[in-house]
Length: 273
Image (cartoon, rainbow, N blue to C red; front, side, top):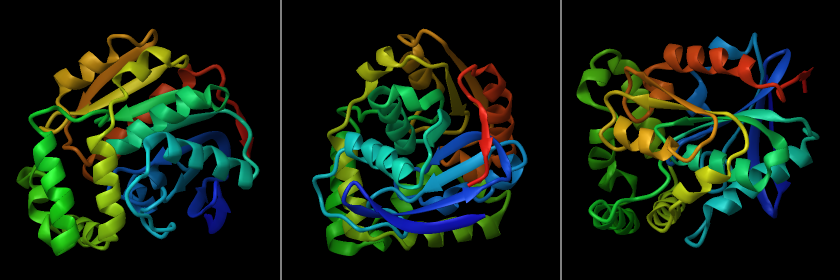
C-alpha cells in the first residue's frame, strides 16, 4: 500500500494505492465517508486489482470546503488526481451512494477513462418528500455538528439487525462518521439536495452493474431498477446489506465486483504504482 496527498484541480486530495498488479479499480466513498470506508473490501480484491481510492474534496483528510460544491466538480477532481499521479488507462469505477453519483458523473464527463461502472445503492437525486428532512439536517449540522444528526442519519443507513452482527465494527463506523468536518459535510448535504443525475444514465457508454442492498430503505431496489431502465448494458444484483454496504457486506461487494470485471473488454492489467 502507498498513500499520500497532492494538489489537483486546485484542492489538496488524499489518495491511496493497494494491490500489486492487475486491472485498475477506483473506489469512490459515500457522503460522510473516506478512504477507510473501503477497508473491509480492499483486502478481498487487492490480489486481483490495482486499487485506487481517495478522500473526495471536503471528506476524510482532503482539503475542507464550504457550501457551493457540485458533483461534476468532484468527478473532475478525480480526473485531475489521476493525471497528477500518472494514471492514464481505463478503470472499473465503483461508488457507493453519493459516491455512485460521483462515479456516474466521472463516466459521463470522462468516458475515455471508464471501462465499467459499479453503482452501489446509488444516490442520484432526492425526492420532494425527503428534501425538507435533508435540508433540516444540513442546517442542524451548522448548529450542532455531527453529534446533532448522527442518530437520525444512521438510523436508516445502518439498521439494528446489521449492527447486531458486529457491534464493534458499528462502533468504529459511528466514530469515523462523527469525525467528519461539519461544515464540509453540510456542503455535501446541500450538493445532494440540488442534485439530479438520473438523466445522465442514458449517456453511459460502458457496462453498468448496480448493487442494491435488500435492507436499504433510502435507495430501494425498485428505485435502483428504475434508474437502470435507460442504460443499454446494465444488470442488477441484490445483496443482504443496508445503505453502507462496503462496511456491512464486504464479501458480497467484493464478489460482485470481481465477477463483473471480466465482462469489460476495455479493462487491462497495468503495473503497480
